[in-house]
Length: 341
Image 1 (cartoon, rainbow, N blue to C red):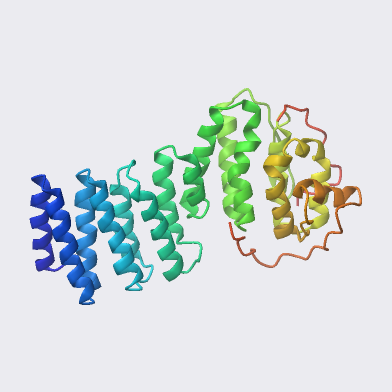
Image 2 (cartoon, rainbow, N blue to C red):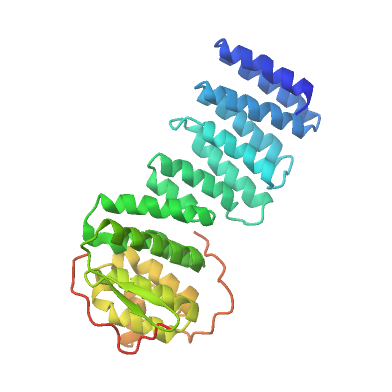
């Protein structure tokens, strides 16, 4: 930051400290506009970002939000700034200064992600910016908003997302463990992110076991893997075996798994149907039948000859491209031909 810009910001900081918010806001806007018109986006960014944070920290959400949006629109987008480390850190600093109740914050996040999708590597938005937004929402208990961003975030997002889901689960019925575990596992699989799906499941089930010492579990080992079985939570075991089956890309294995747990999956048709149909197509090459309920049409074609003929699966050679966005029942014996290796 140049000495001239530093002096300008210092003067406006004094005005803000004195409560002259409107005057400071207008002067910061005028000065920034001059730099933008002159094509000096660097100085405009320094004025707007520092001014926005000062006003936001002073509780002036509207004025701070206005400068924040001006930064994104007139500097980042019109200046075609690359989605680099310094540019992202500036935006994250502003994001964290926003008061929770300020309406402009949501639009700022949307524009921030939009800019990163346009000038970054991923059309769906930069993972670090998604992580920052998701973390803010998670801290505030905004579960649905947090999920949307954390699922597209970084490896560090998995821990926050899993913690969010487990806290959510702990306030609900004990038998719904699989329902809450699936909220991270299934979307990650649909996005082609097996590593994060597996990590999320491991974190969730480890916490489930540690916080419920009386919950009976069994371990099944093979030469290449080990899984923890929850006899009283069959759908949790379904998810565990699904994660082992995905990298194999064997449609027969997926059909066998779905058939074995068909009774339990029937109870989840409204909640899991679409996700499992997409997982079947992405990881196992099973075509999603047209119309009707995705899961039951798929299962019908697998086991009863209806709903169309699935395509033969092909070996998976790479992670798929991302897609554009219970009652307690006794656990049956493991499928006799299910090979964990």
